[in-house]
Image (tube, rainbow, N blue to C red; front, side):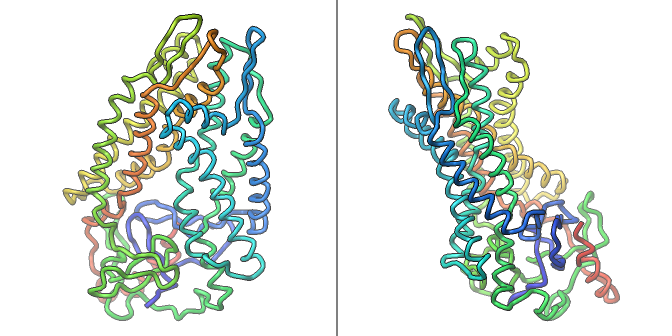
Length: 459
C-alpha cells in the first residue's frame, strides 16, 4: 500500500505529512535537520533548467576542445586540454589515476547533463521518457562523483605554481570551464526526484487526490512530537516503527510486506530496504583500507621533477611547504586543508559514526548527523591534488630543460579519496537514530500528534 501523503526523512527515518508544492520551498527535518529529497523547489522552472542544461552541454564541448593552459619559457611552448592531461597520465602508466581524472571531470559531468536533458525534454512535452526509472537512478549515482568545481580550483593552483618557472597563458578552455562550473552548480541544485511528482501528475495520480490516510489509520499510530531533538528524547514516529519503507530513489512511502526481504518500490522498481544491508561492516572495511593507504599517500612522492640534470621528488606536505615558503600562504592553507585535514576529518568522523552505530549508541545523535553531512559535502575536495598532478604532468614537458612525471603517491592519494567517499556512501545515517527512543502517544493526543507531524513539523 502506498502512502503518497507521507514522507520519511532519509537520514533519521522520521515520518511527516508531505507539504503542498510551492516554488522556492526548502523543507528540513525537525529532528535531524536534513533536507527532504523531492521537496526542494528551486526558483528556476523546468524550462529554465532544460535551457541551462543545453547551454552546459555546448560549454562542455568548448571546454574539452580548447586548451586550458599554455606555458612558454625560453622559446619553448607547451599547452594541454583536459583530455591531454588524462592522456599524459595514461602514457606514463598511471592508468588508474587517469581513469579517476577522466571519470570525475569528463564522463560523470557529461553523463549528468545528458541524463537531465533526456528526462526534461519529454516531460516538458507532457510525456514520460522510456527508461525513466533507470535514468533518474543514473543521475543520483553519478552526481556525487562529478568534480568540475574541484578541477577548477586545481587549475588555479597549477597557474600559481607554474608562474615561477614559465609564462602562463590562460586558454579558451579555462574560461569555458569557469562558465561550466557555474552551470553545473545550478543544474546540480535541481533534484531529479521532483520529476516523480510531475510524472505522477501526468498520469492523473496527484498526491493531494489520494485519500489522506492518517498514520493512525490501520495498525500504527503517530508518536507525540513534543520531544527535544537536541537531547534525543523524542516521541516522533519513524517509518520502521510504523511498518513502512521509504524508497531511497523516489522517496515514496509504502507498507512493508512481511516475510518479503526483496520488496521493490511500486513506483520506481528500486529494491527497498529498511536499513542498508551490512552498512557498518562495509563502511568499516573501506575505512580501514583508506587508513592504510593514507600513510603512503603522504610519504610517497606525488610528482617527480627533473630540470637540467637535477631531480626532485614532491610530496603533498612538500607542496604545502613550497607555497608557504614562497609567500603564497592562502594556497598553502587551501592545499593543506583539502589534502591533509579533509582526509583526516573523513577518517576520524566515519570511524566515530561506524563504531557508535555498531555499538548501538544513542550518544549525541544530532551532532553525529551533522558530522555525517559535513563529510558528505567536503569529501570530494580531496581530489584537488590529483587534478594538480594531472595538469602539471601534461604541461611541463620541455625535454631536458624541465620534465615532470607522476609519482606513486598520486595513486595512493586518489585511492584514499575514492575509498573514503565509498565508505560514506555505504554508511546508512538512519543507524545513528535507531536507538533514540520514540515514545508512544497518549490516547487523547492522536489528533494533535498528527498535526505536529504534518507540514508544521517541516521547517
